[in-house]
Length: 388
Ligand SMILES: O=C[C@H](O)[C@H](O)COP(=O)(O)O
Ligand SMILES: C=C(OP(=O)(O)O)C(=O)O
Image (cartoon, rainbow, N blue to C red; front, side, top):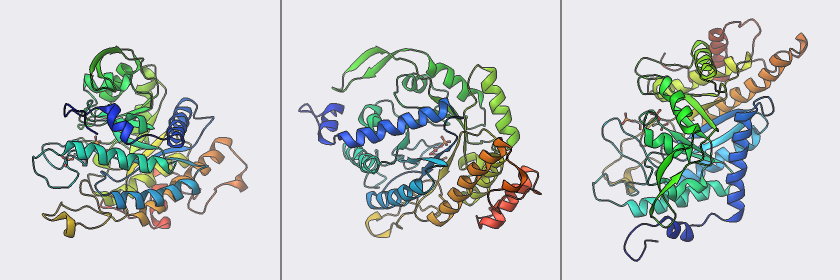
C-alpha cells in the first residue's frame, strides 16, 4: 500500500482499497441529492440530517451504528436526507486524541501509525458508503484529502479552520458540497466569507493521485452552506439567529442555506442538551422555517469516555472517545420529531384547511411561540430535557 520508496501514494492506497462501481454510484447519488436539496429546497423540501459519532474509533461499533442509521434513513426517507458522520480527524483546542487516522490503536503515543490510520479510515468509510448511506467528514489536513475524498458525499470545514485560506481553496476544488462552521467565538461572517472564497477558482498546490505536488486551478464550489454551531458567546440556534444568518447570507448574494449543529457551542458541550436544541429546530421547521438541515452527534450508547490505558479490555462499546453523544434511543426520538416537523412544515406552507392541522398531537396549535412548542415537543416525545 506504500510505494517502493516508502511514501504513501493515494493511487496505491486506492488501488488496494478501491471504490467499487456500486459504491461509487451511491456516493454520486448522495452528492447529487445534497446538491439538489441545496439548490432547490422547494423541489426537495426534506431536512438534511448530518448525524453520527463525534469520531470513529472502532470498526465493529461503527458498522453496527451504520446498520441502525441505514434503517432510520429508510424509515424517514421522505422527510429526512440522512448523511452519516464518519469523522476520522479531530481538530483540538489545544491537545487531545486527534482521531483514528492519527492513532488507529488508541495508544495516545507520539509514535506515528499514520499509514495504518489512513488504511483503516478508508476501509471504514468504504464499508459505510457501501451500504448506500452517504457519508460526511471534516477535512482537516489537506494532505489527507486525496486518500478519502472520493468516498465523501459532503465535506465540512470546522470552526477552527473556517478562516483558513488553505481550507477555503481546498473546498473550491472539491466535487462534493462543503459546509463551513461559524468560528469558535460564534462569528458567522467567517463562514460566509469561506463560502465566497470557495465559490471562486483559485490557483492551488494540490497533491495528485501519484503523490506529486501539482499546481492546479480549482473550479470553484457553489454547493456550500453554513453551519451554526454556537460558540464562546453562546448558542445560535434560535429563530432570531437563523433569521439573522439568512439575512446575512442574502446580503452577500447567497442562498440562505443554514444547517444547525445541535452539539458543540449550541449544547454548551453537554450532549444531554442536543435533544432540546433539536426540539427547537423541529418547532421552527414546523412553523415554516427554511432551515436547511441539522447536525447531531450520536452514537450507539450515550455520553463519552476517556481512552483507557488498555483499550483492548477497558473500552466501553459504542461510546464516544471525544465529545459526548446522544445514544441510539434518544437519536430515534430526535429523528422522529424532525421527521414530523418536516411533514408539518409542508402543511404550514400549503396553508391547508384547519382540520388537517397539525399532523401530530406533538404539534399543538395553542403552542404559538417557538419556545412553547419546543417545551411541548420535549415533554411529549420523551427527549432529554437537558440542563438549560
Ligand atoms: O472532539 C470534538 C471537539 O468538539 C473538538 O474537536 C474540540 O475539542 P476540544 O476542545 O476538546 O479539543
Ligand atoms: C469538531 C467539530 O466541530 P466544531 O468544528 O464545530 O468544533 C465536529 O463537528 O466534530
